[in-house]
Amino acid sequence: MKTLVCDSSSLISLSESCNLGVLSFLKQKFGVDFVIPPFVQKEIVERPSRVGKFAFSAARLKHLLTERTLRVASVPSLSFETRKILSTANSLFYHQKPLTILQQGEAECLALLKPLNAKALVIDEKTTRLLVEDPQKLFSIMLSEHDAVKATEQNLGFFKKEFPYPNLRSTELLAFAAENGFFESYGSDENDIFHSAVYALRYSGCSISQKEIDDYQKIRV
Image (spheres, rainbow, N blue to C red):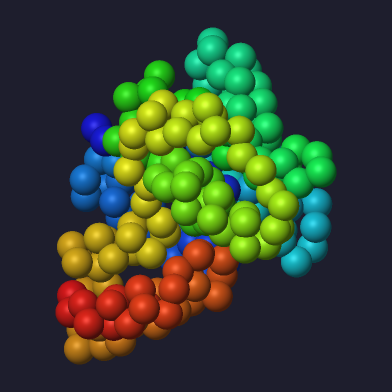
């Protein structure tokens, strides 16, 4: 069974765009094990359930936990590794003071990858993806926003080295599901539905460029 560790950003994008069925589809068809750490459960269920405009999304995500499409996982080293990750990330860049670029939920996701032998991290949030994939590009972006930003050079490559895992966005999960029949019940409208769903994800929080949107428009499922 392929284990994917999921950050709240992707789950919220899928929920807000009415695409949560992708998770059930991939679990049933390919045996994907969708895992979240304890703090992500707080972010997607406990906290939003107390806010009216987010409560419906929280209820849908809670249902996925109840039916075991999603599951909460922890490991003995989670607290220690999470603190280490947060400390390293949030002392990486300085602009008069250390810049906070990583939050608890994202750090817990990273801390779970190795112990669970995960295949990938599912995350829509751009900063964390760049931190792992291309920290130098993240530094360049930080420089464009803060002229005097400094980087702790010895830590710049830490995340790319320690977390050599693919990062998947909600759009990539959707595209894979679509190419394997997720929208086939729509018949001749299958492609239009898929392309519309990609747009919906973009406007539900997924960090995706217009060029990437255009590339998805060329895909025929």
